[in-house]
Image (cartoon, rainbow, N blue to C red; front, side, top):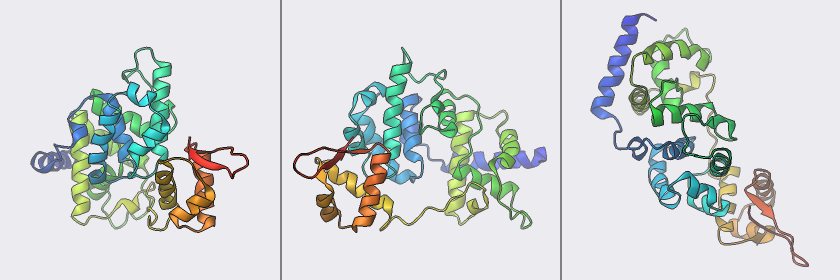
Length: 278
């Protein structure tokens, strides 16, 4: 890519961000790595408007990594309720406990290798580095992909799936000399603006996955089961009646929740066994 093209792209991104950036997002007002970790996990597969209030509520209940580590999974899942993809809450809870266990001074310093913990992948670990410590790193997520594909891969001849590895050279060059934290905020906001303006290009990414319909889905049944279990254990028969889902789908949801470590089956004698949050 020519340096003039990169320069023009930077100017466009910075100009948009300075005029219209989402400067008031609560996770942009902190450098606390724990709070940034919480926001990054919440923002996986969930839109920003849905996350804002949940983020504030969650941190009121679990203001530090120590508070989260000491909490029960049931309390964590209850605080998470409404965000969906509840495995994320368990992974975050498990990571908090592991961080406390593994480090004498568990302040999520940049020496903590976050992506060794299940559910916290390389992207999330890099995001904490960038947004908490302002260390240079390359972040590529859905809005950032939209911006780079729109500006550098807009040719009608480029129809094949574009891998992040192909984007990386231009992403790296564009980031050179920029403030890591603010540059990535600006890229995300600009990419989100392009989408609102009608740009639809993420399907051209090799990493694009279309989200399945939520209404009537297995995800919806899983979430409904967990909400019912917040008030205490229940038998499968009671759950079938409460959630009004067919037994095959509800049974599959129960099996999946148990496999993910979110619920466990109680042993009741002589009554039928019940399910409760793990």
